Length: 165
Image: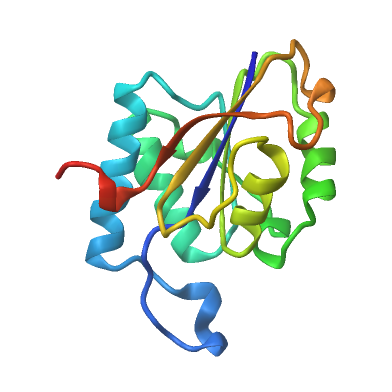
């Protein structure tokens, strides 16, 4: 089985688009990142590989998750394409090139792309992702290149507003 975990960055400062790249997390964003990462850890859902947009709010979200999972921060891959926006087909190409020893891939990014990815890869997800929500998709395949669109089973949808403090 291969697992794809899509995480929308946590709540960030409400700056304008001129400063969009360097927007930092708010206190609520920090709290939500801890809450969702702890919930995933309790479920035994941990990353083999983490890829993030290089925007400050996405990196900070990924780092809070890494701390909770004891994942080395220096191993988080920053990919500008996740800030600029990829199509679902382009994300599928990236997924197809993953090393087979990775069973669980976490991707941190922005809406509307993250919600679009969740809808494109899942046969069950049809909504939008709230800030710092995580969509966990399981694929009953042996290799990453066997994944196709709309075949992921929605294993978990974690919204920080629905999790206990």
